[in-house]
Length: 289
Image 1 (tube, helix red, strand yellow):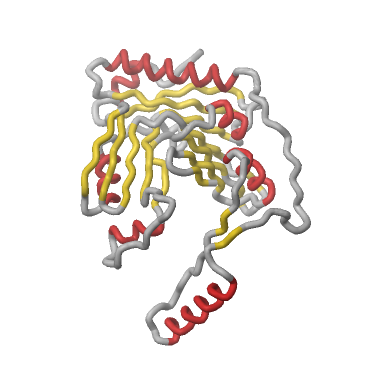
Image 2 (cartoon, helix red, strand yellow; image 1 turned 180 degrees about the vertical axis):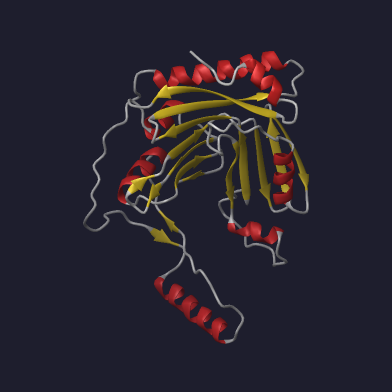
């Protein structure tokens, strides 16, 4: 097995950064992004990014990540940071600036043979994070109690290069540990462990029936009645006529109880509705598909 770059090169790159990527290449002819994600264990703090260009061609790269070394969540101005099994919380004026401050603490080297994205912050910022930059009234209550912002910092990733038909397994060497060679060996060990998981016998993925035609048979519930929704549309028109707004997105929450797993929902959506930005993001608070 071969890891790139070698330790001598990493030592040269380590002078000005805190993270240096190391990687292995393996063949991708028996792997798919979905089966690889399944082999990661479908754990919390994992993600899968894919792309279909123009609804016809798959994008060059698919990205998977697991085992982040740091997480940050914000509810209003209250921020919680979790790392090494420990958490700390405080109140800040702008949690987005707090996230940027964390990213600034981990500058990383870039290798020209790797895609620009091979590690970093992955997560979501909800609509109400606009209040961090705009002076708006307090956000309405959230009965789901979800974070307004939740990101994790990943230094271990799997990258499918669909043009070269290879998988890049990338880990980052921490240059601030006091023993760079030990940190290099640790990163190589993480890569080898993940490669073993990817090359293990395929985890069962049960075939599912998918109907691309016909009417849905499931019953959804909405937080709007049709009359309430139509009334809100009329109110929006009045605001536009009065010059108070010029653009509005009137949304509703559709709910359905299901026993389906997030990965199975993602598998169905990528067939029924492929798009330029497809993702499955799992955190302890919520799964986004």
